[in-house]
Length: 181
Image (cartoon, rainbow, N blue to C red; front, side, top):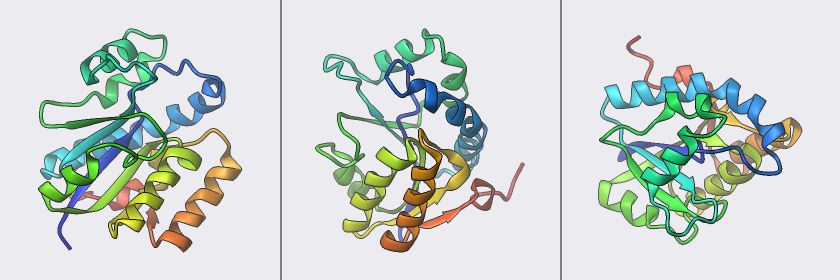
């Protein structure tokens, strides 16, 4: 097996969309786990790649997306997860982290074949990204406490599908890179 990367999906977010009221409580619950994964991955020099929706703002770049999210009413969900100077950032327009993005090329250039997927939304972007990673013969790990959902029942089903149908390892975030406080 090659290298592992931590992929943070859609956590740079203004929560200004129709499902936000249902998503926010789950997002609040996963921020500490995602923050812990970020801290441990960075400590171990595991590449961190943010793959984030551009919210239809085709002129925006990652700095503008981050500034907009930090200026919004839910900045408390974004502040603990701010990319550092070593983080990579890929902007996406649809659900999958791979759909018409340069991520596949980036992973190949970095020798990465194992992805730890965290972020939101479990039953949408995380599920579709896991499937697209699987068909690209990448190994996938999904920490169940580091993915936020809109519908809990669909999220549970999505995690089961990722594990059973896509061979993903579904675990708790504290099982990853937990050799230091």
